[in-house]
Image (cartoon, rainbow, N blue to C red; front, side):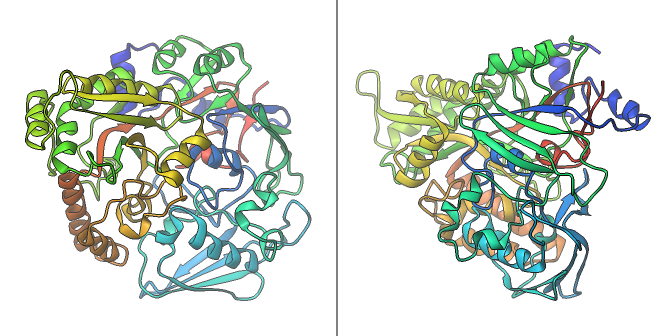
Length: 532
């Protein structure tokens, strides 16, 4: 099938399967083939291979092949067994019980028990960027023997059962971490031991991460692959060439430029898949440092909003690979999305007037200068920065676009706070409590903790709303609370949403079983096999 760019973008926005969807039907008639090595590309290079303290996508994609969660989730986000075989929730929503797999070994030969789960949940609550929110109501986690865990909550948490995937809440080996010093500095973070289908072999910085088949995996005869090579290829054009030549087998989160995606539709050996991102819908937008003397002024933030045309960002920076949005809550989360919030139509004249009224008239060509740091997750974010620079120059704001490697970006924005404004993903996850609360509540202003409240936004009403959202079980009341949150942040603009991401997985058609549920390439690849 060949479609124009407009047709491609329409298909992407609709969440349709692109070329390669026929592989699903064909795969159903094939028997899995054993052996072979899968070459899987991620970008940028992760900072860790165990995701108890980060939400960075490349780290999740790499780590989830080794470290597993209690549950996995289908395309409808219905929970499925992973390390937990069954679960129950009390009628009052205050107690959860998980039955765990028996006769399960960590990759180093130690026995997996409930004590590992109890330890991991405590670590996630203290160290994970979303953990403080996800497990805020977790009063107690206790082992009920070696093969069951009971969680007692102080208040209901209607989202909790959906927060237990490997990439979000990984279960770690207690014997490797407990009483071994700072978990953040543990060697296991760079050479992980897990329960998953693949065993870590080596991490060659700047080149690759390699894994080999776990012969004792709990779900025999899986995995089918002999090995997995995770490639680190910083340059987008080089990634595109590697897919064309067969050097790469698969890559998620749109690993090549949208123009390359369009071209790939004509290549018989490659397929494109838009499913597998249901677990973590993501918006892209600007986050303002409200400690900046200019950006702390709401009139300035409103002026910036009126000066930027999101349609230009979508079509120029992202080549149309996404869709518009008006709220920070993803439109794909239909039960939560509020389209009736304050919006800022593209109006440079109004933007200039607001800047004048804020006390920043033109002095020659410029009013003032800002530095823009983009998250270095690919060329599209850099192009977004350049597009924003051009838009703000038209109203007299001199923007310097600054690029850096990922660790430097994290340090600058979240530790040093040496930034004015940035563009990056706002991953909603499956629920605003888990995905968005970390960006907006005052207790989530945590220097040094990535992907939290970097704007230093503080509004007691938003804090109160999220406290109620986290425990409200009534669907209608919860929706009203989430609607009100969206209205407030749209009015106060600590964050300016620009567009909804529509990521694509690129794969060689010989790869079967790569997108089996709502986590897509963030899954464990136990089902993946290669056609001859």
